[in-house]
Figure 1 (tube, rainbow, N blue to C red):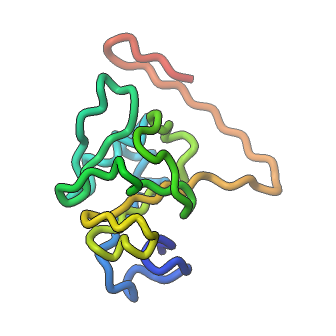
Figure 2: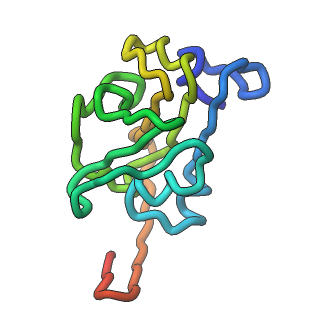
Amino acid sequence: RNTSATRTDTPLIETPQAVRVVPRQLIEDLGARRLADTVDFVSGVTRMNDFGGTWDNYAIRGFSNTDGGSLLNGFASGRGYGPQRDAATIERVEFLKGPAAALYGSSEPGGTLNVVTKKPQFTAAHSAGLQIGTLGLRRA
């Protein structure tokens, strides 16, 4: 399911636009630490110059999204360049490709991406994780 294409909870099979949803399970399977780690697995979306990892910068179908093609929970976010988003807070990422992105008023010809963050739960949940990797990666 996605909410970006029609602004309603519509199944993907009934959506006429080109939509790609990266769910939480895929983010965990990829071991993504940043939003940028998920972009490599979405067709038509490429990383652009992020000036040494200081911000998120993408092109959807060849058009840069820095002028308003980025949404957070369906609302405009990061007009221009925003800091890199940590994947630990992301529930899913929805990529709405093509001119259907005009639904959000940004008129991005390539498309837009919507980052859906995790919602608070009414019951307590606990988890712990540890990552160790090359080049001094340590993350708890």
